[in-house]
Length: 154
Image 1 (cartoon, helix red, strand yellow):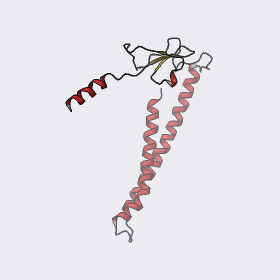
Image 2: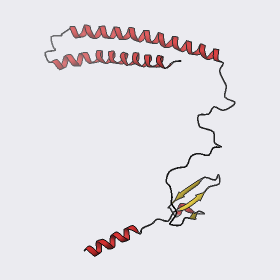
Image 3: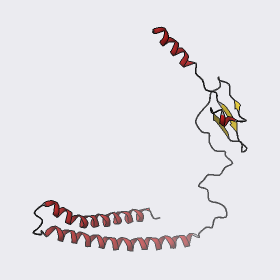
Image 4: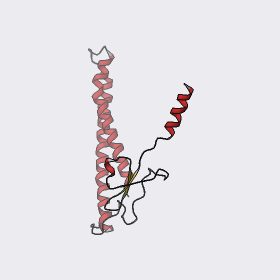
């Protein structure tokens, strides 16, 4: 039994995969160990190190976030005017949502103060109040989102 274990350990260390280096028409290099995908590729010798980390893109390629030269530009004054208009719209939406939040909170408080005769089971009270709580939560999330957007403006 110990000899068999030793033999298996030695054989496991000698297992190697054949690695092929492929260069496509654009000059990009890829490595594969799939014989079917390696048509026209060169086999690497077993003693060469192969890295699986992708290389950096070529320097000739512009970054993905670069703006094309023919992209229309906006004059600084016009952009400032657009930003001010956006800020004004957001502030109006914020005021409207804050009013809706106040109304929803008031309606919730009124409903919490009322107790119907058929609501001896407290779960019925919770079920009746849930739509009012949901409305308050919705308006609160809207107010928070608009405030976040206003903070992000220039």
